[in-house]
Length: 129
Image: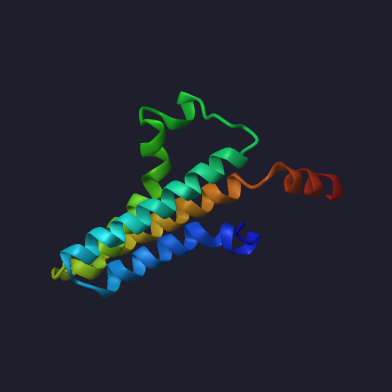
């Protein structure tokens, strides 16, 4: 069995490795490998996050018109596209868009992670406050 610390950090390791490959190696094979690492980390993060939620299923009102997986993978897509533009674009006019996409991806991912924390922590804070 895998130790808890390693198990919990695996999605972040996958995504970090993928983003590091994406930013450092300029090769089509490395690019596809990086995308697969990021996708694997994102899918593992989404599945674990969805499993641990107190409200297990989102209604269609929260998703809007997007299917479940499109909605869930959106911040990772923003982050990956932004870093890809930073790493591969030779046009300096693309840099502001790349930075905006990267920051937006990190922000949406952080907000979702904060909203999906276990309810035990939230109830303990409400009782003490």
